[in-house]
Length: 104
Image (cartoon, rainbow, N blue to C red; front, side, top):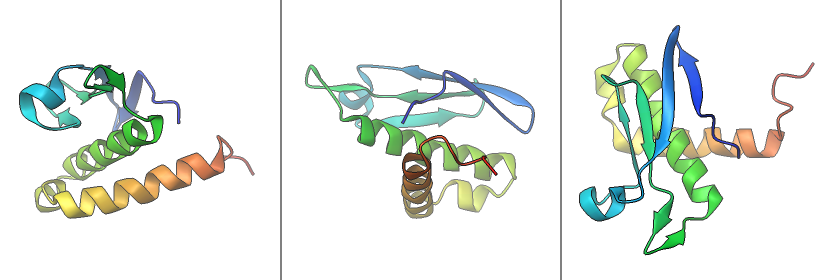
């Protein structure tokens, strides 16, 4: 899955960036910052790249937090299990569609 460097949600431009120290400093593989409009992803762990699928799933997980935040459903935004489950489903849809998702 090719992770976009920028994208828009409700007309707001978001960035995606990598932080190689995130897992070591904060014990997580990604986070979404609603104030700075970015998703930050860990791409290396112990000096080795994380599998692309894991980075893609993390992106989709964080994207679900962002989507629920933009719909102002803060209870859903903070529901880690829901974001994990829906993020995995979204990731599978994007991977298996191979870019053909919007074709008619």
